[in-house]
Length: 221
Ligand SMILES: CC(C)(COP(=O)(O)OP(=O)(O)OC[C@H]1O[C@@H](n2cnc3c(N)ncnc32)[C@H](O)[C@@H]1OP(=O)(O)O)[C@@H](O)C(=O)NCCC(=O)NCCS
Image (cartoon, rainbow, N blue to C red; front, side, top):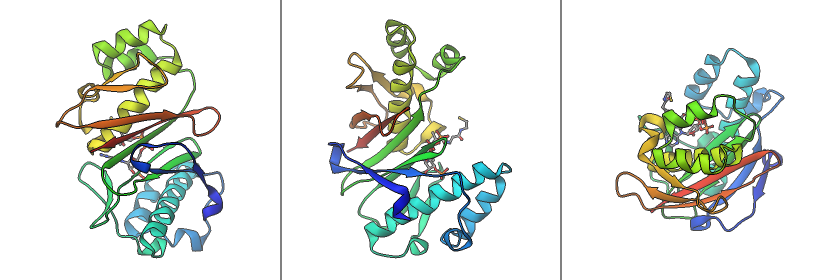
């Protein structure tokens, strides 16, 4: 399974390890699919479109593969659970992990020890209703920053990926109003967290994991 995974090398916060995963287009074999839990197989059935079902199965198979290596067990032995808000976890693990996908690639990140991690990856494509999305999901400060960058896709995705990575590190995802996290992009290459709930101390890093994609990683300590 590791042939589908490539490590992304950079100075990630908290010495996190980041893996880029290929999650398409072929379906997993029966042996590969048998790694999944009954719950994951049931979730996979919900996807009516085969390519979406395959992507889900692959990202779970590969997430299990990475975690199993960290735990020193087999992928099907990983007791992968989800919080009530959808945050995946392994009870009792001394490390944290996060996963994100966009189209047929995924990012899987694992911390070396302390801290809660969140990752987000997005394919950089023009979004026709970008301004309307920003009006709903961005703070007034983020919206004015976006205008300062002439509503560029680069600035939009920078704020979006950082925000989503932070919401995953906090553990709520979009169960929390995305405007609760305020991202500063004075320097597009080095975004900052201007405000976050629950006294979260968040370190951020953005990077380009592969051509045409942008990503952000947040570490909560
Ligand atoms: C977390 C969330 C922001 C990611 O959505 P996305 O951009 O479509 O998908 P990504 O590939 O980047 O991330 C999906 C992964 O994030 C992780 N995740 C899900 N909820 C999470 C949470 N609360 N905290 C941290 N990580 C979470 C899971 O690993 C998930 O993978 P899975 O589908 O295999 O379980 C989104 O799923 C969410 O918040 N969902 C809950 C709220 C909701 O459904 N609202 C409805 C309308 S907005």
